[in-house]
Amino acid sequence: MRARYRIPLNVALTATALTAATVAYAAGFEARSFRLRRVSVPVLTPGAGPLRLLHVSDIHMVSGQRKKQRWLRSLAGLRPDLVINTGDNLSDPEAVPETIDALEPLMEFPGAYVFGSNDYYAPRLRNPARYLVERASGRYGLNGNAPAHHVPRNPWWELRDAFDQAGWANLSNARGHLKAAGTEIALTGLDDPHIRRDRYDEVSGGPAPDADLSLAVVHAPYLRVLDAFTADGYPLILAGHTHGGQLCVPFYGALVTNCDIDTDRVKGLSTHETPSHRSYLHVSAGCGTNRYTPVRFACPPEATLLTLTARET
Image (tube, rainbow, N blue to C red; front, side):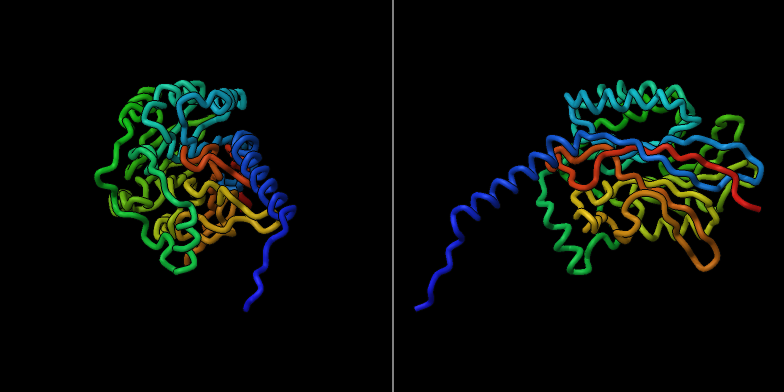
């Protein structure tokens, strides 16, 4: 007769307490511990003065998130030269007015935006473990998801109208131009590849020859998109979507990316290469979470102030 092994009561209680403390920390503290990341990127023409670009992403606003709203409003105090918003502003269809109010001070600056899937669709409760299963099976994020059907919609058009009225360029499968600190900037953007709304053939052709700087903007950094932008010669690509892994392992990093990019580039500044070109890639870890998984661990919410500097000759 096989002897049964029982976990000692004190061990079980300790493990339960540690789990509860970790969840409380991840939801109650770290998910609300907003940070500003600062990086420099040498992409401007030789001799050009620096340009300060504020990158915000994955706000996932839920009605009543006052601390997040105050923090977003405070970012205007940085006085950036331009603002790029890479989508997933919403995680609550009722939160559009609060999102617009939080971003209103930033709309005083030149800017541009793309949308992510959570701008279009209301969030759904999903098992977060499925990302690990899909990653292990090799099916993880290869092409993104088909557009959702029979899912409640968010009033994304209200966000669009507010951004457009402020003069921000809508880059959803579109090109745009803006001038910031005397610099002529051409922008090329895509709608969200995560739900297969990207149409690169509509914006292909590479950087604008008459601009001082060309930027590529997209919500989800899928490899097919990064390859296309890089092959066309864009010096800098801005993206979000990954949440930096959201639940990371200390001293190891992210386990998943929610797309087909590797975990080493899940957040921050890196590079992407094709046979003929190399681009800088900045992936924002974002400053929010899906309302049904409001936790972060070893991956605090953030925005990034990128100082664009002159490249070497």
